[in-house]
Length: 270
Image 1 (cartoon, rainbow, N blue to C red):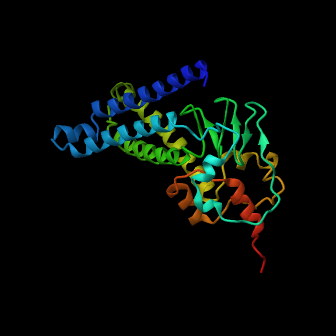
Image 2: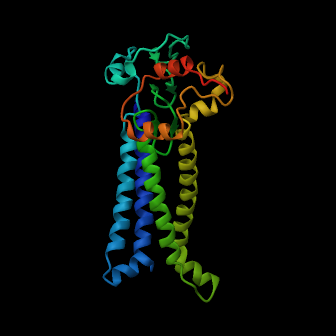
Image 3: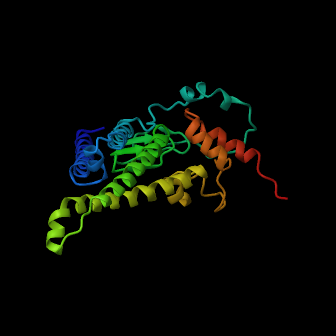
């Protein structure tokens, strides 16, 4: 990763962290539920809120700095050796050949894509997220989802806290002076809440059908999908299995074998 990208990533992460703690500080300093709990000696809720914010920041950095699944070599033997259950004998069915990346010249596994920003090929590429300044791929996608969930919980709680601190006043001018910082924090929290909720909903849907954002948006240009029907997904094993595999099975998958199994065992119409 070049120096320019590294500098950009540092700026994005620093901005995110600064904004998070600035909003948190505003919520603790204003006359909100958190401040009232502190004054009454009830520290449990303020402490839980603080820990939730800390957890969201830690998850942000974990996802941002984690290897998303960069393709390092031309071989997939390292993946195959760690996936014994993927080594079962399967019928030999014609499948799209692995192709070499036109940028880094490595042989791309199925569902991998070259990221123009990271300048690397990523396994089960979903998208490059400018928010975390990192790709979302096979290694960090589940953690990205966990981060979105924790972030949404923190934002919704912060939204409730911010609303509890808005105080009435005699005139609009006095009201804006008294609540200016809190209203600014409320606006930031509201926008981020809507964005995170939309992202989490979209990703949960795509995970439930075992599809990536890239595959969903560029289906007509992907060699192993463009010849499938509009509703056909060779990687879909049903909602429960898809969610279980995504969240509970921590391994890299040889998607070529999954693709071949699906092609070799088509569902017979009734």
